[in-house]
Length: 113
Image (cartoon, rainbow, N blue to C red; front, side, top):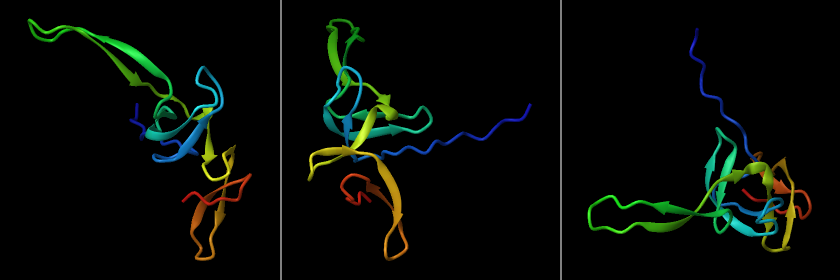
């Protein structure tokens, strides 16, 4: 049996993009992508999908804690968001006059990259 090369998936969002959640319990929330996971096609958005985690004490005499952290959501559940026009939009890829391929919002024509 041969070992296969790692599969890399192309996602429409990148780290630092402003996105709007379009489905789930946090529907309508706008935040910035802080981390991406291309292998599982998931992203972490600031202020979205916050979970509480109970942490046991590690040393004697230390008390346990309840920590709130942002958990990943699937990239298909977010759309890129234009902060200028205050609207979410799909993206398309276009070429600039210099010949560089860039991402553009379909609704507003705003270039992201």
